[in-house]
Length: 256
Image (cartoon, helix red, strand yellow):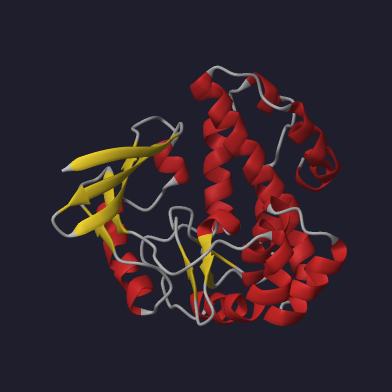
């Protein structure tokens, strides 16, 4: 078996593997105190969900090798969208697959969004920078639950996790899946890809999700990104980008 390293970050290593069955992708999760926080569904328990996604043509085949190793089929015949072609060519296939995700009746081992955020708050509460915020977990929960939280969500939608061709759209990296509302899933995409007001409205129209619902969850996407970057800074020893700190300041009155 031959290994070719593709990525190495604070939470996992990604390899291309060459074996008798052909090329695959191997994702090896690193053990650290933040792993269970970011990937709350135990990998072996996640296999059942991954099989459901595959049967529903929402992803490629995944095989759990161990608690830390995931083997993934190589993606062929698909391309990742760009901001230039997403709205012109890819939106129809995206919205079809997006609706399929939110029709899935998955609840077992899936952490709710409010619980996920609260777990971040508890783990990071002793960090000096985090202490300045004085975030109230009850207020965060109330803010999140302004819309009904009964929908299965991918939880980490951005262009690197989306693959589209002329007939279909599939997704990878289901580690952050959660129970929330479809508006949260779109808010994460809008935030991470920096969509403007017009693009958010176009996305809302295509998916039949209210613009106000999407905009409601963009601050939660910001907050989770801040938590993630704070974790990365702790693991790498590098200083946190304070631009992100400035972004969430306007949201603090709602959750402190």
